[in-house]
Length: 337
Image 1 (cartoon, rainbow, N blue to C red):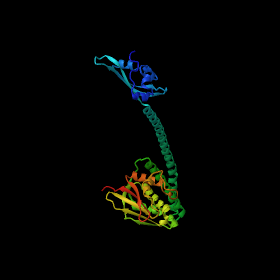
Image 2: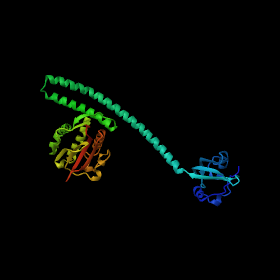
Image 3: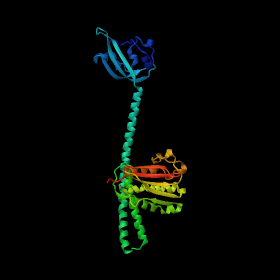
Image 4: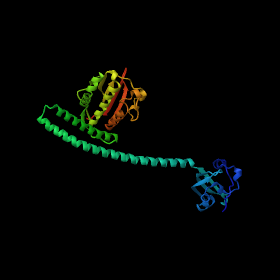
């Protein structure tokens, strides 16, 4: 076959293959290929009507084999006579490595995705089992307690049993809703009174207020009707609990609403140490905590609060309370008129 000898070798080729020009001129082109048959550009340019492009394995002077894209074309003179073949090799080692790395990553995340799907399916199954297995006996307890209260209406023990069973049922319902929230699923909503919710939440902390010497001030209107899921009470539980744990030295918590044309905004003020500006947004992320002596009540709970707000097409925020303390708020859309 003609044109199997190297007649030109430029600087780019010297850099790629490691040869000096004078060392390769006149030698067989086979020295540049790991598999000379695949690199037979003279033959392939002839059968492919003058040009071709192909991935081949080239070989450097030190014996190192590397992948490249070879493009070749026939060179002709003015009379149309074939003078030779010009070949250009482009080293694609880094491209191949990147492709291999991408494939490994794809496989890794494909496997992780499958494991996550399986884990979520198992979580849903376990939650359904727990919900069913707990709700049924709790329903029996609640029903039997109601019947016994008809015969013993003044029995405080029955009142306590009934109250505890109702609370457990509520915990189960909230757990189910939180699972939907964490997975980004739609949750059921109804018209609720924010003020009533906040009062009920506040009552749950009566003992803690007494133990810490704190007071709670509610600066709210008579009613604030919103379209929400009862799980939204967890937002205020988290905010108030955080204020008691984290800012008890401030001795006071204030819950108030803010005027807004399109949204209802409720804020919980504390008077403890002010959260640094660079931490005010990141504390709503799941894995973020403040420094060791300040991390109580900050982190995972606030991440849940953020997801609950998002499930209501709302948002959460924190800002400084002058001269000292923090203001945690939730903003959700008003019910359209």
